[in-house]
Length: 256
Ligand SMILES: Nc1nc(=O)c2c([nH]1)NC[C@@H]1CN(c3ccc(C(=O)N[C@@H](CCC(=O)O)C(=O)O)cc3)CN21
Ligand SMILES: CC(C)C(=O)C(=O)O
Ligand SMILES: [Mg+2]
Image (cartoon, rainbow, N blue to C red):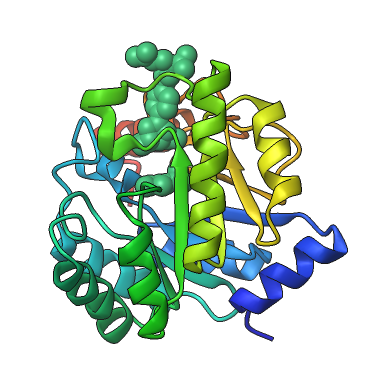
């Protein structure tokens, strides 16, 4: 059975932890899906494979292209696509247009957008009313990197209270789940207990209803990972070794 947004809610209620990872292409999407990953996010962290320093330059067209490829590789997992910077903040009409294109053109089941109260509450309410499932994202929101940097958010009592209130407002607006990025574990625990919808943590400790990481970080493909990522294998090394072996055999005329 394909994963649905309702399924995620049930898993929270049952205490079954949700496994999420990012995918940016067909091959990785197929591997993650066949391995049983619950939620596949076409994240704007795809900046990392396109050679951008931040997520800001990514366009909707780039996200659509990669989301289509990912969707073709997925049979089970719920596919969620990040709306890139300035494809939803300008107006409700712009958000509806961008989110609509994602669902119509890629076959993904949901969109994710960054920000909370008051900025995104009306937008999310209207998207959800139009039948578009929306995932929220609070705490460190990388599209605001030039305001926030990449530091942990919610460290003071006031900042923590603000993030908690944002999460509550997003739930009321109708998000089916919410990403909590780079916030203290005790704040993530408070939010997770307070909300009925599942929380998916990245750098937000152990108490979330699920976890997400950037697959390229997990595989050791990125040059530098955030401090909260865990590198489970070093594909940079593996690839480099394979390429060296190939190059040596070509130079020695051993291959083919
Ligand atoms: N490959 C990749 N993995 C990610 O997890 C990721 C992205 N890209 N792009 C979008 C955001 C950016 N992320 C990041 C990246 C770096 C830090 C980091 O190094 N934080 C330091 C402080 C750095 C600073 O202040 O400049 C820290 O100690 O918190 C945190 C989150 C998480 N997201
Ligand atoms: C890290 C996740 C939450 C994300 O937004 C992304 O990959 O772009
Ligand atoms: Mg993102």
